[in-house]
Amino acid sequence: MAREYLKKAVLTSKSDASETQAIVRGILDDIEARGDAAALEYAAKFDGYEGAILLGEADIAAAVAQVPEKLKRDIEFAHANVKRFAEAQKATVKDFETEVLPGLIAGQKCIPVQAAGCYVPGGRYSHIASAIMTVTTAKVAGCSNITACSPPRPGEGVAPAIVYAAHICGADRILAMGGVQGVAAMTFGLFGLPKANILVGPGNQFVAEAKRILFGRVGIDMIAGPTDSLILADATADPEVVATDLVGQAEHGYNSPVWLVTDDRALAEAVMRRVPDLIETLPELNRENATAAWRDYAEVILCSDREEMAACSDAYAPEHLTVQAADLDWWLERLSCYGSLFLGEETTVAFGDKASGTNHVLPTSGSASYTGGLSVHKYMKIVTWQRSTREGAKPVAEATARISRLEGMEGHARTADIRLRKYFPNETFDLSADD
Image 1 (cartoon, rainbow, N blue to C red):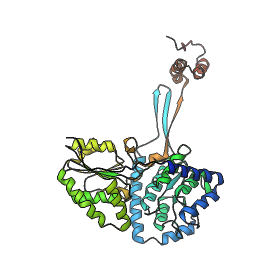
Image 2: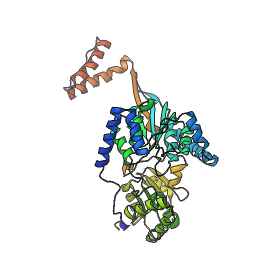
Image 3: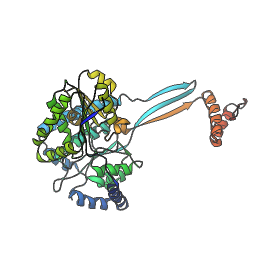
């Protein structure tokens, strides 16, 4: 049967960004032109903050003292898991060399970028976990200068738990500045910071647009839109668990899509009945976000079988993908488009968001069809090198000369010619492009 939408979204997460782009470009241009003074003006205007911009040792110590011991242990637990996973990821990419031809050796070298700028949201929610995810991976990758940047709250500064997380995970500097001005400060090297080689971390539409505009001058992890989540569930799934997981992700924001794809009508109907009641039990701000997200962006899709479910999921390419269905190995093998995959009821997106070890900075808005999320590899340049004996260079030079001439690139061809003449003066070579 064709896919049946038991609930269809009335809005999509993609909107006209032209106004946001104009605002962000204006701020970036102004800060680049006027430097620290402009950034401080925007911080006062948007953050409502006029305290210390770069936190010193005393500022960090004061913040750390405010963090309850139990929360410290939880942050340390999450950091240890993320670090272990990042170290395992790093081990999958190594320096190597290979003899391509006799006498011609080529190799790969993995070089971390020098300076990483890690943006940690601190608006309506304090994203402690984002500090862990971004700073830890940069540290494991081997970045020598790591700046953590987070919006301060008026009269308070950066949330103490964010400061603690950034500090223990290895941030060299902590910047109390949010939004476009924070991104600009890291990019342009304001306040004595090293200029960032890469910007990472989630943020609102203004932060995302700033990263998009600056991409090319600096590297970025990705251009992130509203977070999204999809659940694949069959008749074996618990509708209460499925509904709770959908609501848990819908609370991110009013425009955060959540999708349920199933081949069981009874499950779908049970989940749809339960979700509104679960939303009503949330705190006020969370309730407002989840209500709007479920009303305007959520979808429930009924498919004929698991193959159609998998195809539907791959077409959506969700940021977070949960499978609560039989035969998990089949799903792991079959599914191909997602930011992070959560197999079975025993795991959930929130585990990955906070503490299980995989990274929560993930591709959104369908971009999981072509890219993965943040990892140590994002901070590393995989570069190549080569060296050769004269005999090893001989066949490569001949082929290079002929290919270059066929392409019309005579200058390229001559760089091969000169080596053949120098190294093999008594030999004759056919270096023309003609047969």
